[in-house]
Amino acid sequence: MRGLLVLLFMPGVIVEGIYPSVIVVGAGPSGIAAASRLLDNGITDITILEAEGRIGGRVNSTKFGEYWVDLGGQWVHGEKNNAAYDLGDPLGLLSKSVGPGRVDEESPIYRCYTSQGEVILKEIAKKLVIYAEEIPSDPSGMENLKTGSYGEHVNNKLYEFYDNHTEEIPDDMRRSLTHAVRLVMMSSEGAADLNDLSLKKIFEYEGTGGYQLVNWKERTYHTVLEILMKKIPNPEEELPVVNKTLLNKQVIKIIYDEEGVIRLMTSDGTEYTADHVIFTTSLGVLKADHEKIFEPRLPEKNRNAIETLGFGQNAKILLYYDHPWWNTNEFVFNLITWTDSDRKEMENDPERSWMLGIGFTVSVEYKPNLFFIWMSGPYCEAMENISEELFKNQTIKFIERFFGNHHHLTRPKDIIRSRWNTNENFRGSYSYPALASVDRDASPEDLGTPVTRNNKPVILFAGEATEPHHYATVHGAIVSGWREADRLINLYKNVLK
Image 1 (spheres, rainbow, N blue to C red):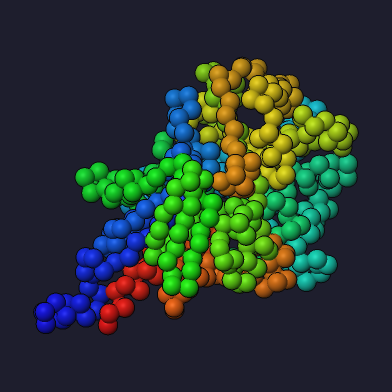
Image 2: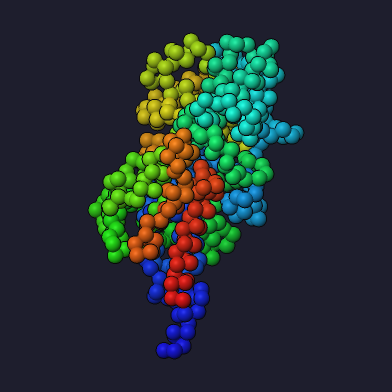
């Protein structure tokens, strides 16, 4: 007995049988990171409840044509202070993309197309896009802002650029260019509207050093999940994360009492119990359903963050061609602009207005038969809601309208779209610091504050929206999952001291 007591009281010792049951809600990067960390540290009584019929969350890799493609997270943003990069790079799985802002010999070709099928700004399109990419790191002029919004700052900086290039950019082109560039910037910042994004928080954001568009070569972002689960590099060392995951289990109620016992109900009527819950579902789901899910309601700090932090809207459209109509030896970034008259016409057409949310198109590295369309903002929902047949027909008409005058177009073999915004298990893409969150002093740290009972964390929150320094990223989601797993590991390593 004395020997057992000595063992129990040794700092950091894990003793089988004393560890709690843990339910992880969500099998995205944060949930898988948390579960893997717990398993790796001897906490094995784990169940993962995943609402979708697959693992991955907002990392959604699917077979399309001859390729595996990402409908969600795609690029590793940065080479320093980035968990995803640190996981993939030592294994030789990553490569620098040729994307916007790259100014060496591998720079992409920049073109600007109009809704009249014209190519404009041939000499200055590249300079404009690179200039726009640098705005987030240029605070000059922010002292003159009226609203404190990033959107106001972006507009001011763009009009400075136009004023310095009056010969290349006439006045009647400025509004359409501004709309297009703002859509591009919404895609990187995640905001539903740049005017709702806090400029102050943009300049406080702790980014990652190095190149910002690193890709997984022929692979997809699902690779990072396999690394987390230790399936890569050695499948024989894979952690049993998948075996502990139950799919199609949408959690609709979490009841936690004063004693700390937690009951979870899923939409199929099943009930589960646990000592701790790590909740990793998106901020979009929390915004829509937190009052219904949690009983009793969450503390004010968490609710304030849920209600005021922003959650953006982005979407992808991918076209697969047996015979690509573009030069597959080039990486081309196409900025999409609408004339004022064409925009007005489209706004009044409920079946086609979604096209106004398209900011740019690009070819895809390592996958030469793919053509990629990126959308941002509220028009994403309209695109997701139209029928499959109408969606495909209209996408082809969009290609014909913008590119038909300058290319010998071929017909795509297939077209797919993401559906993040209308899927009730996501309700959007990723988080951003909205002006309301600044006004009400809410932060990702507040969202990630655990709910405690008897000084013990019982409801823990992970996910990119809870990461103060790397929100809106997959690597931020991973770090948040590790953070909450470590919280439990440390709790149970020290509780018997």
